[in-house]
Length: 219
Ligand SMILES: Cc1cc2nc3c(=O)[nH]c(=O)nc-3n(C[C@H](O)[C@H](O)[C@H](O)COP(=O)(O)OP(=O)(O)OC[C@H]3O[C@@H](n4cnc5c(N)ncnc54)[C@H](O)[C@@H]3O)c2cc1C
Image (cartoon, rainbow, N blue to C red; front, side):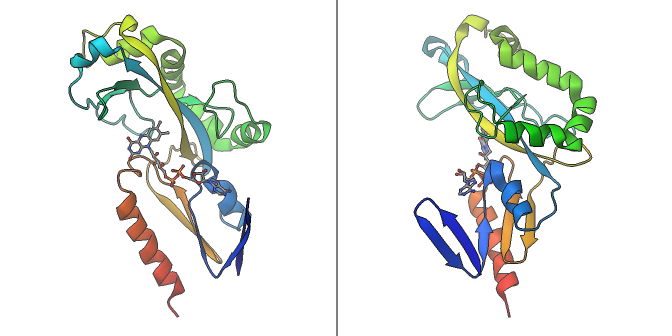
């Protein structure tokens, strides 16, 4: 029997499917799964194009994926209300809910720093990391990256946007895991890494998970 404790009480079940995003590794490890990979939070901030400059971007503009890293590259997205976002940045964060830049949770930070993969990744990708810090602290740097696709874009065209936290699965060997990771424990299935485009593919992923659960529960 699995007992899920939540803010309104408890729920008992014969089997559980855990989809805890940035906290997925913690739940999986507490249920007995391998600690590899660990979730390391990356804050992704977007700026938006000033409304009088939106006509510069009339479609999604996406670069090719960066070889061998799962980190997203700066892209331009036209949303259904006409707003155009530019980003994201990718800054390693001090908390799994670092929606504000200043948020630090000692437990999250300690787990990131104690993970051997963090240091292996840093050694391998320090140049990319330096570029990403530049994008995060300097509007001019982000505008320059956007101007690689739309040369008319200037720093003054960008204004305040929004931010999210990417749950980046990081292997012990320093590999930024870019594929789905699903772990089995005795009475649960854990979605440990569902990287972009997981939101887009959510129905297909749900089918895959349902099939796996059915297989586990077959007598
Ligand atoms: C800035 C940004 C932009 C993105 N853009 C896109 C995009 O354009 N297209 C795309 O396909 N994907 C995009 N993604 C990726 C997409 O958001 C993720 O791949 C997807 O949300 C992962 O789904 P998930 O269910 O694994 O985790 P989440 O969506 O993070 O869901 C996990 C849920 O579990 C809850 N939870 C955690 N721990 C517990 C606990 N102990 N008890 C109870 N509840 C718990 C959390 O509060 C959360 O609601 C983007 C991500 C970011 C950060």
